[in-house]
Length: 305
Figure 1 (cartoon, rainbow, N blue to C red):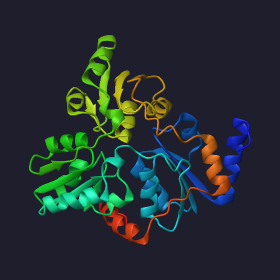
Figure 2 (tube, one colour):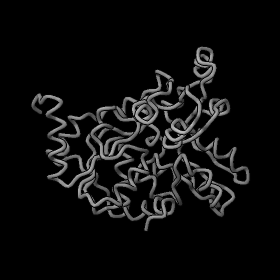
Figure 3 (cartoon, rainbow, N blue to C red):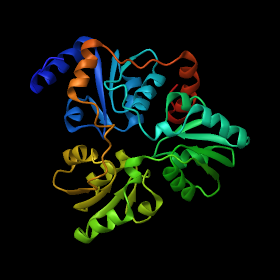
């Protein structure tokens, strides 16, 4: 691509959006400049639902591959573009369709509840999906006593503590970024900022969640910081959240764990967004079989018809 000045890149993206009848969706962990040119910024499933309800013909999904796949599953008629097609979530790669089928053979009476942070092929083998915000509610709602919970062992452990009536069979997957956040990281920051409230994403390890003042999804974190009377927070999630949080809570002190950075989520740039729109390339393509079978678990969770 030509070395177009960054201002011109933004202007060109704006023009192409209108020409293509496109919307740009960006996850909370994306680069700040990508968030700033997006029509909507949020969590993966919330963005996919926005995509499904949108009148746009083209969805440019800035994030990782499972997110763009979810948007395609919820509305197969739309053209979904993934600016960086090799931006694959490490956690999603820890759970394959074959592995879920093998687990079902071992636990024949169990249902499979799967985190949305999974591939389309894996979703096609699940009974129902969940998000970090509704995982406990979803697990509690299934009729089976035994639940195979994939792929996040940390979220699964947290759900098990909230829904003791179910026997959760946990996967050994995890988000490397959240896994890297330790209790000592939090305690070291509390030493310097003793009045700060600790908020943590449920993808963190259980020992971290136990010392948190609030545990919640990225959207719940944003709302908590905005509405809390507290003025200082230690935030145990990926550092990309800082950009969006500061927009709504600019007068508050936000302390992030500096090493909690997902390089995969940072792959998408303004230039890769422009490239996708100009060339209309990197379209998400899923087989009819996967689209049909994966839509059930997602739509059971979202209530979309």
